Each structure stands twice: as structure tokens, then as C-alpha cells.
Amino acid sequence: MAKVQEKQFFEKLKTAAEEALQEGDGFIIGDANSLIIEDQVVGISGDERFDLFFDNNGNAGSSMSKKCVGVNVNISAYIDDCDPDLIVNVTVTTNYPERFDFIGKKPGEAVSFRMKTNFWSSTTINLNVHSNKPNSKATVYLHYST
View 1: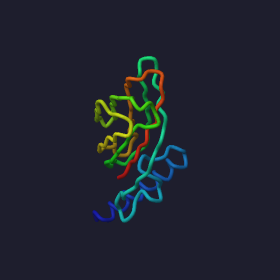
View 2 (view 1 turned 90 degrees about the vertical axis):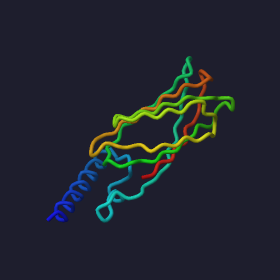
View 3 (view 1 turned 135 degrees about the horizontal axis):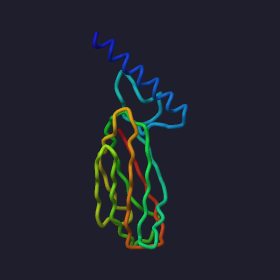
């Protein structure tokens, strides 16, 4: 009986994932077709890239929220395409809640962490960066995998 309930659970999960994708919400760990194979969340990976624009005080930030299915996501990232003397302090917070701090990072210097996501609800990720170079720009290169 437990196997039948487990299968029904994963069928509901897949259906909900497909509906969320049709609504344009997306998932932090991939699309509905690759989300579940043999009743397991499988390894999904990808790369993201986005620009940070530092204000007069050297601060920049970004935030995103994605529907999740309660998996751990491995993240590695670095900042580049910027002043070579740039030094940043980075704080990543989530509504799981978790917090990751990285101090004194230079261009090209990677940071890595393992982030937990909420089960079957949205996980919000906030990125706050302080730079020693106000009014400048940098690009974040990020790789994620489950």
C-alpha cells in the first residue's frame, strides 16, 4: 500500500510542476520532464549569468523566488568582468532560512555552498554584495546542480 501512495504522491508532484511551468513560474531545479525519474528528484544543473551595478556606497543586490521541491542545491559562483582591484563581501540569505557569508573575495575567486530549498513552496534567495568600488559594474557567473 505504501508504494501505491508514494507513486500517487510523485504523480501529483509532477502534475503540479507541469502546471507551474505552464503558468510561467518555473522551478529552481528544472522542468517537469526532468524533475522526476523513477520516483526520485534527479541531478539537474545549469548556469546563470547576471550583472551587478554598485551604487554610490558600493552596494548591489538581487533577489529571486522560485517554486521548489525540497532538495539541496549546490551553488558555485564568482564575480568577473570588473575592475581587477575589486574586492567584495557577499551575503546570501534564503527564506528556508539560511545565511552564507563570503568576505574579501576578488574577481575570479569562486565561492561554493549547499542551499536547502523549501518543500513544495517558493524559496526566495537574496544576494547582497558590498564592493570597495562604488559606481561600478561586475558580472556574476553561477553554476547550480542538485
